[in-house]
Image 1 (cartoon, rainbow, N blue to C red):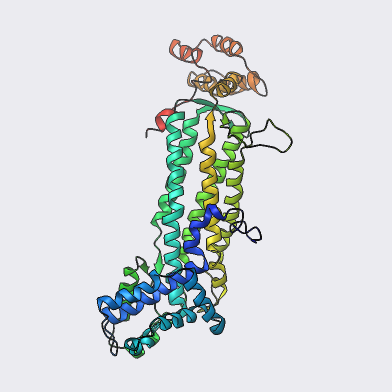
Image 2 (image 1 turned 90 degrees about the vertical axis):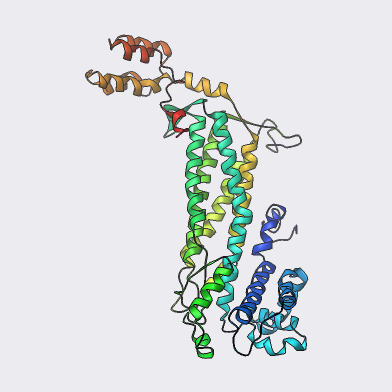
Length: 450
């Protein structure tokens, strides 16, 4: 951590998001570019067997792949030195690889490094691999941990009734487990949508038509060749592009992530409110303080940190999904500087997910507080009574309950006296007389088993 860092991701929070630097740092981008360039060289020589190339031996392939396997900070800095001269980041990668292939035996193959490629052929594949790895090797693990934690709490809270609040006011009861299950199902659906997004790539030249490829080797089926190469990288080929892969799949990913984050913001705020209502206590940690002046405080800071960082992430993700699919005619460079910030969005996501998990780990449900809240609000049974009155064709049921309860606190005694006067059929009367705010939870428990 550097105390002079401009971004908190590289300063205060560096230790919490450092794993992402393997993918989204400048060194990470250099690695992916070198990887794509080397694999393309091997492919056109060994798979396509282009005229004036030759097939690499196993030892030669091992040597070439060692170039990216050995990529570290020191090697990445060598690329940056070259870039100072070229003033072009991808051309610097090409020259770096050629320097590594300094032996005479490579001389006849040097000009096949970056063969037929525009910079964007290398960049789009590098970013696709970067996003894929960062998503599935870092963020998805945290998402799955959140889903697992919520589902565990669903089981623990399954039978614990709580007063619902619509518009912030007492409403028909639910269970804490059901409320957590709502969040789980929302998240599960969006994670499934995220996983379903195909990660695309292209390697079709300066305007997407294989112009240079075809003029040099008209006998090669370049469409089929590019499909095979991209598939070998673990990506889905996009054959219909300009100079750039249009980034629609990136927008789909970022929009899915944004929806996941929005659900989590909603969850953070609800948990924050439940803590403020006393529904949850928070486990204490030795040495921590909640206020510089009020010693009694135990603040829900993990949920606040999560909410704040999710907002930061969504601001970036929104811009990415709106901007990246737009490029003037066959290419402009506005996507280049924007894509360099993808790691920041992922960083804020990772911070938020970890804060949420930390906060969930501190929660201790306060059943006494939940029970007291229910017992203090018998008026929430007005819905039940007026509905049974409707069933039995009693005149103006809603209006009668409105007069009895609107803006008023109803006691158990008030409730039972009113029900007794209704002269309902025995079954309905007994059901309402035995009803309490704690038992008026409908099918909440059953819904968690569907």
